[in-house]
Image 1 (cartoon, rainbow, N blue to C red):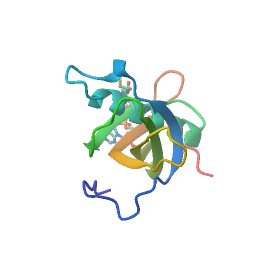
Image 2 (cartoon, rainbow, N blue to C red):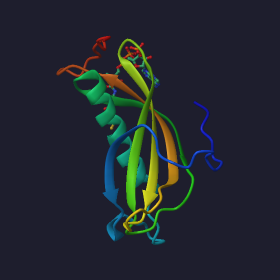
Image 3 (tube, protein in one colour):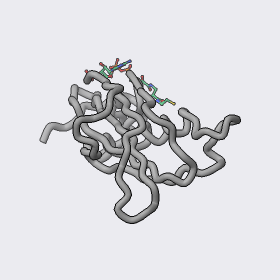
Image 4 (spheres, rainbow, N blue to C red):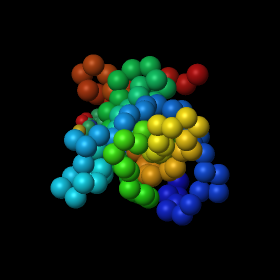
Length: 135
Ligand SMILES: CC(C)(COP(=O)(O)OP(=O)(O)OC[C@H]1O[C@@H](n2cnc3c(N)ncnc32)[C@H](O)[C@@H]1OP(=O)(O)O)[C@@H](O)C(=O)NCCC(=O)NCCS
């Protein structure tokens, strides 16, 4: 995936809507801005949920290849994470996770604030890699 930092041609979220959460004052840094680690953690969780669903079992993050933060998030905005599986190997899944925000007003439009590329590995109960079953 080439991670674009420009405005999307189609400014609507796509993929699986894995999670949604509201940004709170406790999620800000000393400058009063929502900090990147908070968002990265939720993007990681969204990717984990999508890969758990896909592989029907445990997964672990093995790599975060890239995260681009495109715009700041305001306290009170709803953050949604959307996932798209890019490829499945023997035990690994490459997945794009995009974060979008919108205000809580009815019919508020989504605006993309970050995009990331993660790799998860399917693991068994002992933490060893397991082959992903092909459907
Ligand atoms: C995930 C883990 C079990 C993989 O073990 P490993 O010995 O690296 O396994 P392998 O070398 O066989 O790699 C497994 C797969 O991951 C892929 N992979 C490993 N490291 C990778 C990396 N840095 N980037 C992309 N893919 C990677 C391999 O290509 C392989 O893919 P495939 O099976 O689809 O061909 C092990 O690295 C681990 O436990 N890491 C910690 C995970 C974790 O705790 N994450 C949360 C951090 S807080």
